[in-house]
Image 1 (cartoon, helix red, strand yellow):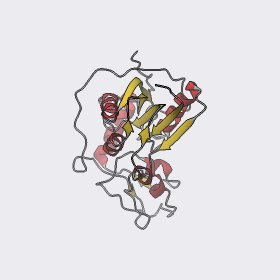
Image 2: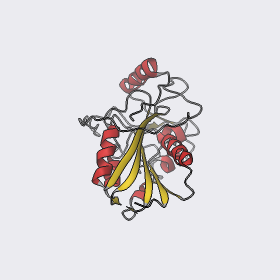
Image 3: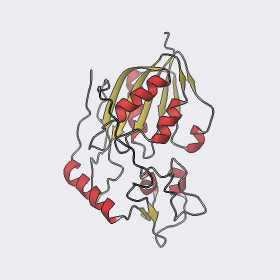
Image 4: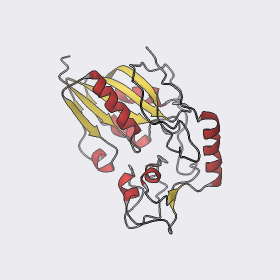
Amino acid sequence: MNIQSMGLVYFSPTGTTKRITNEIAHAIHSKRVKVIDCTKPATRAGESLTFYNELVILGTPVHYGRVPLKIADYFTTFNAEKTPAVLVVTYGNRAFEDALIELHDVAVNAGFSPIAAGAFIGEHAYSSEAVPIAHVEHLDEIEALRVPKNTAYRERWTPRTMPGVPTTKGKLCIQCGRCTEACPTGAIHRDGLTKTDKQKCLLCCACIKACPSGARAIRNPLFNVGVRILSQFWRMRREPETYL
């Protein structure tokens, strides 16, 4: 195949996957890069994408050991006849579990031919100054990786089993609407900023990171105990795992 350009496709609610995949693209030094940010629902609602004669970087964060369901479904709609792909997952220091092999399987089913893959550390979505989890100030240089051979998927969380969703403390909310703009699944409506649609929420915490007044938070006590445990055992940043 005659590779003529590069495609960069990523889902990045809090910006980490965007930064890492862009670093990879920059390291390859391609002059022609087509960037597709599929974080917003409107982008994913468009026509199915076709890739031909290009190298494609597919990037997604890990959500509870898996590729987010909406993104796995979206990537499956791509048309890529043996298009080479670099697969990238980012995770918050604990474990990427089945996400990388799942992304590999999704890419193959869409017609891609994965040539390299990697799992990279990013600050955990639940990290904060009070409970830091792999808090980072910069990104290290990125290496090329290969997907590990593990095919057993863990079960996804469902709205019924989720420990809670971000809510808004009305007295702190300044009605700026940044949470609505940041939400990658449309779970927060502009006319009802204090409510979160549990059926749509990914617990990606993009709304919490985007809130300038600190009004958004997950206030479930058991959930917050779990976050403190994450901070206790996985506070220090791990290194990317490589498979060559």
